Image (cartoon, rainbow, N blue to C red):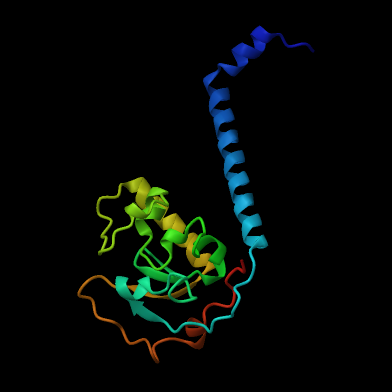
Length: 184
């Protein structure tokens, strides 16, 4: 069966074929990016020191800023009002890492807008009310991925909110972190 250039050209200009090819191309790109990230995580060295589990607590932006991997060996990041310990992902979130700008900060806006530009992060409360539907969906997707991989250590407080006393309010598993979290 021989196919001429004209037949092939006609076939490739069909809208359904073009849509199919675009979908396949996007799927291949996404799979490739995810595979690269998985390989980077697998090749990442363990932190030099094993830090004890952090007790659940609330953080103001100023309190969170200490946990940037420079001032404290622990690396925390805020996303959508929650704070996660991402120290295991030091190669990504630590100083010099591709997402190092997120360390010790509320990175919600960066996750929502797919940006690693430090100027995107606000140094005051960010209510995210100016984000569109797609950006909010992106933020929620990133939050889900972070929550599946890293331990939730607390809540990010807005100005004027009071710290909660979590002592005695949580189970032993919540204090120590979920042992079923994926290893990096």
